[in-house]
Amino acid sequence: MSTHNILIVDDEAQNRDFLSEILLEENYAVTSVANGKDAVAKLSQDNFHVVLTDLQMPEIDGLGVIRYLIENRLNCIGVIYTGYGSVKTAVDAMKLGAFDYITKPFKADEIKVVVKKALDHLALQEENAYLKQQLKAKYKFENIIGTSDRMQRVFSMIDKVASTDSTVLILGESGTGKELVARALHYNSPRAQNPFVPVNCGAIPEELLESELFGHEKGAFTGAFRARIGRFELAHSGSIFLDEVSEMSPNLQVKLLRVIQEREFERVGGVKSIRTDVRIIAATNKNLEEEVEQGRFREDLYYRLNVIPMNLPPLRERRDDIPLLVKHFLAKYGKEKNPSLTGFSRKAMNLLMQYKWPGNVRELENLVERLLVLCDGPEVDTCDLPDKILAGAVQTTSAVPHIDLPESGIDLSSAVSEFEKSIIIQALNRSNWVKNRAAKLLHVNRTTLVEKIKKQKLQRPVEVKLG
Image 1 (cartoon, rainbow, N blue to C red):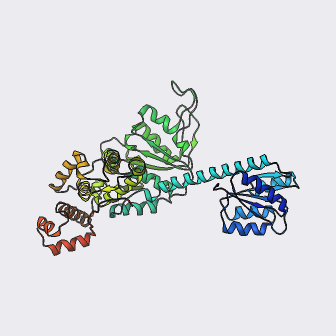
Image 2 (image 1 turned 120 degrees about the horizontal axis):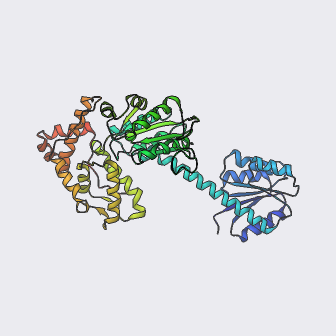
């Protein structure tokens, strides 16, 4: 039996029976009613994919049924038929939202074709809606994983800044998720329905980057056989993400500065100024203040980009998020690559918590994906982890955490709290969370340690499993 439900609305029993017979032959589930009022009642209770409705009926006519579908935003396609066909009636029905229009007398093949087209159209609508929802969900907050204080501050900043058109400069090491944050800013903004255009300024050769960003006219340079629009034009009314903006040449920095100031530019080889309405989100893994001091980055451009700076913490400074990230990546890749692998043992998770993660979240994601392919058992254990994780964990547990002082300074109380938290976690992990042993490692009594654990809201890492 087909899962497609068809509703027939006609005040003539002969027509209802004829249409039902045709559609039942095609294995559709068919329901029929004798008037528009009963149709509205059915539509309010049950789900239908297609409604075939007569135009001329007492009380609520066919146009009224179509109007009900549209006004209530039902996920259903309406098709009208009548023996009183006229161009005006057809136009009125289509304007109101009917998918198609059929005149009597019916032809069985015509009915089958129209219903099939209506179902194909509905499937396309649903697929488009799903893809839009997936895209929207992917770059909302759900895909930026973290419950640590540092990440909560990032979420709060995105929430405050997204609705504005202010230029944002995202700062963070490679692999910390700068593009994810940029997309979250765009897809939570009033520009969400318009393009988001990413450009990796460090991955495109200098001689090609200007044309990539601003486009070129025909004959602008050797090989320019036709005019080409650039990324700024593609991003019109949306957002452009300039990743690794620090890699721009001095010449391009000047041109970018003009775009920010004047909201216009010329294509390479062109003379006509092109107006642009685009939000600029830039990112870098370098210290731009140092780049300015060294003369490698324009100071005026730096201040134009640095309207709202957002600092993304490296993974080693938000270790509490590692179990959550692991669970996220297991769910993301596990179904396709290895459904039988359901988690990490506690000992393996402890080692992940101790490792320094120079590649940050991207390195962790790659590790989880690789382990899903290589591991045979139901969970990842310490023997499955690569040597660098094992060696890195040993180094981490035997060393004092290193904290760099940012150019802008640091909140001392927060830094001391984070330092204390890191040391306590290391002691607890080394002692397998036996508090008496951890207290001895820290040279404090057990009561003091328990109080600090509560204050820092620390919890023992679980054996991370799906479900």
